[in-house]
Length: 106
Image 1 (cartoon, rainbow, N blue to C red):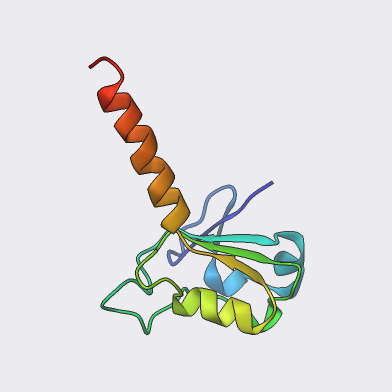
Image 2: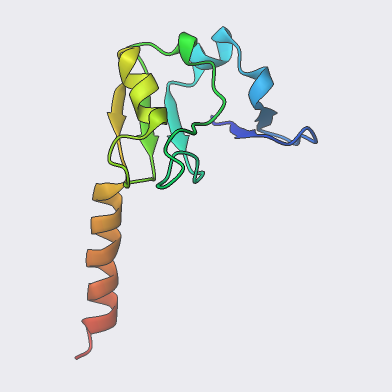
């Protein structure tokens, strides 16, 4: 199961608003992935509007952003004991796979 979280109020299946993230929701979904530009250079003082006080060591926070290496999103999660990872490894893997695709027939 998964949920998408949106700033929008018009919601559909598997989509909730940030204001609907409660402790039971955070306890049920322990993998949190930021796919927004919130926290990306130069706006490094921004993070998704999550209830970080519900974050625990049972959570894994992944941020697609890699610049800065530790966004405010990741910092807030780490402060609460969550495992964190940024998007650097994903970027590297995508580059390597793209290289293979573009150069396989040369």
